[in-house]
Length: 314
Image (cartoon, one colour):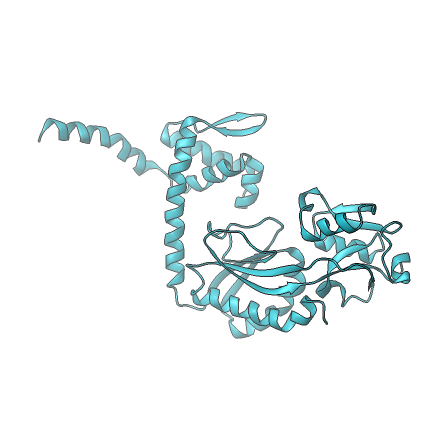
């Protein structure tokens, strides 16, 4: 054996030994901490507790013999070694996720889990009431609905499908507009605005979204048509706006499909709020998976049936 070959083997041996000891599952926790910079946020996204994230990252550092993060009052910042590993681990993650999508797309069984993410009010008032129909046609399917304000990353398999309001900007996904989603101004029928039947931006109290959702279309519209309005309650949840309006706390901009059927609420005359759009998103690798396809067809059917209410014409 030549001397150069002996040297190469000697150099490669420690790396091979480390690779053999490496728990690849640690990389998922490492990458989430890289992305969020916070144990709490990483734990929330991964569905575990803070100690689990810290323990898995510490185990990765021990296995590699490297310090990957510096812990400080502002969060967890990457060391130079952590920066380099993040780039490498992201490529590993992309390949693993591509392999997973490839396998799922070729699984012809109409059984198993399909995970769909959407807003809480769409989950509770549009999807869940239609679940019996899905169960009747596909009893082997298990639908998981992740109701959350944050946009789940379909490329990273945080969900298989997404039902979102507003035109998506996600690269690498197949997107399709399903319907317009009309909104109106509503108040409790027992409130002054409800008895009056029309909105008065100068005197009526309003409920609205907090700063985290200040950029949504209805908040921008309200700021334009009623800059002088008195906001008495803010939240990051449409369901909470709906509940507050029913209780007479104030006037709210609400989806028509949700509020028009509620006898406790009156639709007020006045300027018409801007409409949202309802979009379906799926990764291109998964759209032909039979179980994902079955859920897509179910969503298409229920949206078609609900379109008059969704578009405010019910």
